Image (cartoon, rainbow, N blue to C red; front, side, top):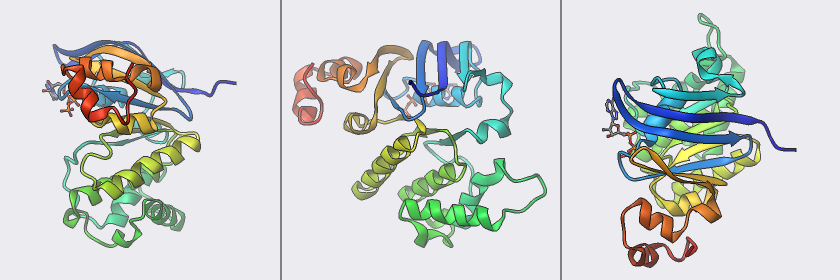
Length: 257
Ligand SMILES: Nc1ncnc2c1ncn2[C@@H]1O[C@H](COP(=O)(O)OP(=O)(O)OP(=O)(O)O)[C@@H](O)[C@H]1O
């Protein structure tokens, strides 16, 4: 039996005010699946994520979360189902790492209540899952960019979401931490989470994604299962490169056609 559809977009148009960034975007993401969006800088990946999270209004089309239109979800309810790790942290967090991670529990904690011992344990467990429990009492602002990224991933996991939206989750990570995050994505997928991420590294998409969405200038250039959709030919087309150049750099990881 097919798993539950967690997130679905139909004929979605995205953008800012009167400026359309992308249109005619369709996808469907089920529990236990990973979908990866790839595309050149400025093609609309982050805008798509912000729209799916209700942070930016859709210009046209529909978004459904667990079968219900996005507009019918409260922010709090949505945060109990979908966690988001943005590309950059806009806010300045003058807090210790453990406090930042516990903030992920806010969708479950009453307005005037404090985090419980269970919330704290869960936060410590999520830090340990990512191998960064030793950072628990450090100040977030004093961490490296890569360490901050891992802390934000731990904060997303503590939300116990059904879906994770990860905007370039490996971007500022060293080789070891990239592998840790990719492995964690696989584990979460096997646990039944729906994962929607974007990356500039096709080999990462090839490793973790069941499906890919290739976005070029806001239009879906190709979409489908990774093995048939993410090829040297489509990569060359997506990034306006000669196929020989793509082949030279990626032929060990991506198949030819
Ligand atoms: N708040 C905003 N108002 C108006 N235009 C914006 C805003 N934020 C982003 N844009 C524009 O939307 C377009 C898509 O940006 P977006 O950040 O979604 O691209 P991206 O694919 O995530 O890029 P990158 O790979 O560089 O992160 C860009 O042209 C960008 O300048």
